[in-house]
Length: 88
Image: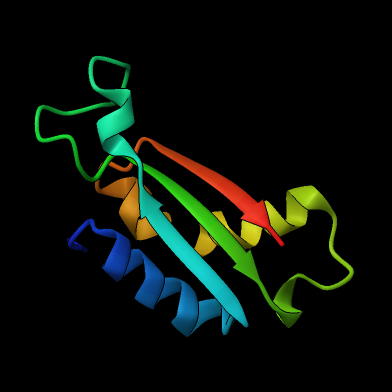
């Protein structure tokens, strides 16, 4: 399955799968120019996700991160190189 890689598309996927009460998806790709996994466009490879919601209650840090990775797997498969996750 091909997906459009953007902060907006990732935001929509996370909202659909995890119903967060707070969510911010930031494309930080421009900060990684020349690093592994970066592309020439400066977008679509490195993201930061700040998220909160009941889906994360009572889960370990690893389990919380797994929820986010699972929700974004299609994006990872299409070339997202890094996702920094902050569960609030």
